[in-house]
Image (cartoon, rainbow, N blue to C red; front, side, top):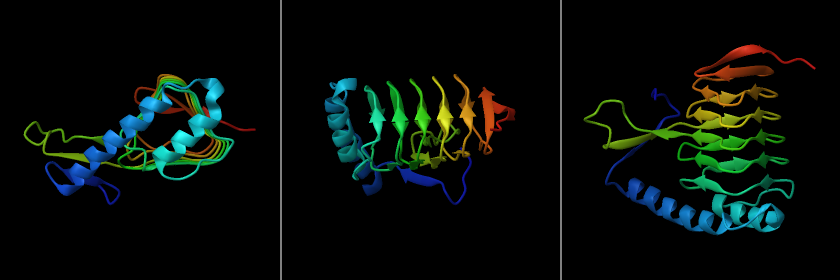
Length: 185
């Protein structure tokens, strides 16, 4: 994970890492309750998700459990957002999801990681934000890593691993994801 001004570093055995662990425990308790709900419990899912992220979500927000996260407080979602089942959001670096976004099943948004150097791997966690702009469709089984912005109106093909920014109005796919073609109306 490259370091830049958007990189957050959380050293082990610090007050910040203790807060991160407490947030993880809080999120695990809320998602355990949320994950007992079904598609028909949309209002309860919205209420619990709002509690999880610390702000109300719009009535147009729809999430199908199960759902997993490491904290929740660093997730922001717009209106008319759909999150399909079995998604994982590791949000330590921040996840911003704009209006009209579709997220398929088994999608992982992973903002955090560890250093590559073996001697440093357990010393700290690094995190960078993920931004999903308006009207994006992220298909089934996609993984997006921290530091990535997915541009407006874009589509990420099923099974892709996104390691760099996705331009607006494009279809990307593969591992690592590459531009396949432009999307025009």
